[in-house]
Length: 97
Image 1 (cartoon, rainbow, N blue to C red):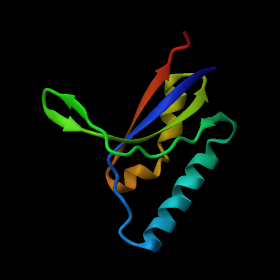
Image 2: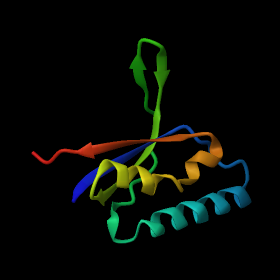
Image 3: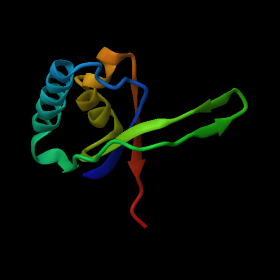
Image 4: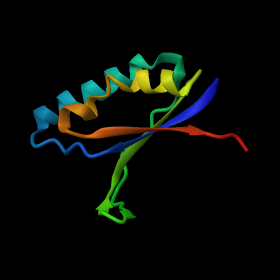
């Protein structure tokens, strides 16, 4: 069993209180659905940027979970609510040192 980190990119802030409530419920359902695999539900990031040859972009948050493989971690990410807002999830294996 290894640790995997989800780095969220994109998505958006809710435009109304009702939308914010729906979004929080969706995230609660997603994280709750990870069950015992969830190590740290994470949190959103404040201002951030990643600089590369094509410009900049920023990460918007993270989650840490246990999974038996990268494939399993990717499969668990498929229900992430960030996709509804046009965002994506990067999945990284955290190597124990």
